[in-house]
Length: 434
Image (cartoon, rainbow, N blue to C red; front, side):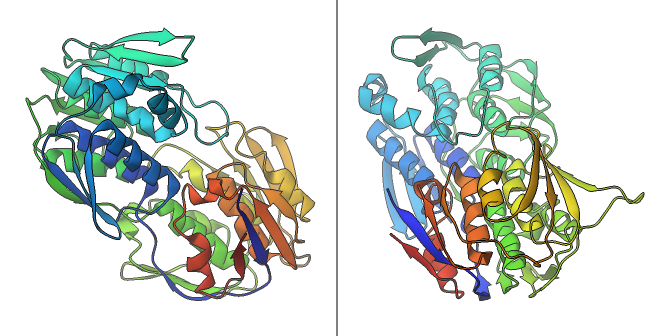
């Protein structure tokens, strides 16, 4: 198991370009299964979750060619449906949560799909009801094999219908959209997710010949078509990595410019960091974070403690709350971090408390952070990364701490961040991969 050895206390300086968006990549790669024609995808991040999904498609029979360092072509001419019944498929798809979005394309084209109970981050319950109920509404039947721990899904003919999603699930909406584009008739999805990455998926499907209206809203209308063609698509930059770089610059008092950040697709992220007192300058499509020795958390108008909480888009993404929490530890003032979606995502704060942070874990969803205003720098520590987002938060904490820290189980970080140690070392960090 690999580890990071981090020598903290160094300021960074320079420019960094964010990778392609992980969450968009997983949706887009699954969507290439909807056509027999060639689909070209650019700006694909070189990270474990994406690479594992690409390899899974190869083993299913998709012809995949890497035509440039971050560009691939996919041609799903003939899928080996027998492979879906193998132990190899069960193991590989179960270890990769993004594989759940293969269900929609497989049902749309072949009327059959298998889905082992998915893995991924250990951050609490991650319901699949939205996927199941939505796809059932389109005419699919589910059968759970308790011995093999796999869902067997079949559909003689997918038919369009009206549905109101019980939650605005991004992956759930993506799965239902991919199943509906080839269904007979019209599908109306209310309370649909409308994140930029879901918009990107819909725009790509339209370029392939799908008929989707309402893109960017929570009401999608899909008129089914007989078949889809090929296309060329470029992924957006990863908003979670951009937010991580903003937090890193603040915690280490560094001067960093984030290039080509796609500012219109960042939503509330820059403003939420500004509420923590962090200076962010917009320069064209770049973000510049100047060196700040001190930053002060804002309060509400009546002077009460600021709350930063996640919410469905256009609200603040839950994937960045771990970064906001660690950044607040060295701010001036206090803030309540409210993680509404996942009840285990804040449990990593015990590691920050060991480093000297003043945090009160109120319950599984809320933590109060009392900022130290750099009066007491964090102490070096040995830690284990529990999930992707907590992992990058711990890396940021270690880079700001005095002394040498060690982060174990960095495969969790590699799942979502492309060569993060090499890229940060180019800015002046001291990170060694062991």
